[in-house]
Image 1: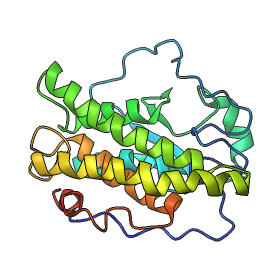
Image 2: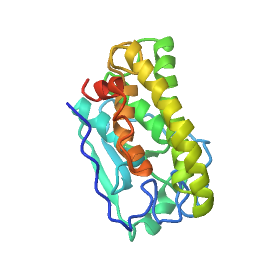
Image 3: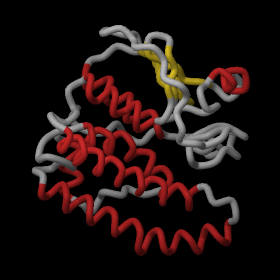
Image 4: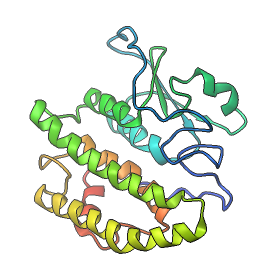
Length: 233
């Protein structure tokens, strides 16, 4: 891929990109679904060449890095885009009542970063040892921390509170994270880890359109090393 796809135009009345309906919290859960990080009991092992089905709403957001990873690796998968009307019936079948969910040989798992890490290893974008995997994970988790700080403001329901939070976000939080990430990319030949292409780069590229959507801006316009990152795969 030479670049991130252009911003996905959403209708003015579109629900938040992380979940539908529009009153869903910003952590990726839907309705009254819990947002717990705990995993369900482990399923049996899938086959060496499993089938994959990715469930999410018809938006980019949390599922896009996983889609990018499948695309990079040339891995076939079924991309199920769930509609608002379909979600109530489907919700009880999901491990934590939320999406995205990845089905591997019929076994459904949740947590978008864990899914991305799993796919990344399958397509050769993980580290070669525990230390390298740690470095990659720190980059991914930093980008995800950035996303969460933006989401807290983007999904704030009180307009007055949102306006105050947005001042801190735009003048302090966003510049801090982007300057740090741009410096990391400069030190790593246009990458976020290990001086080479890893799934940290693709995670950032996949989530960037969503970050731009929430902030209503081109976040990396003034950050040349992050721009270089988008052209690196």
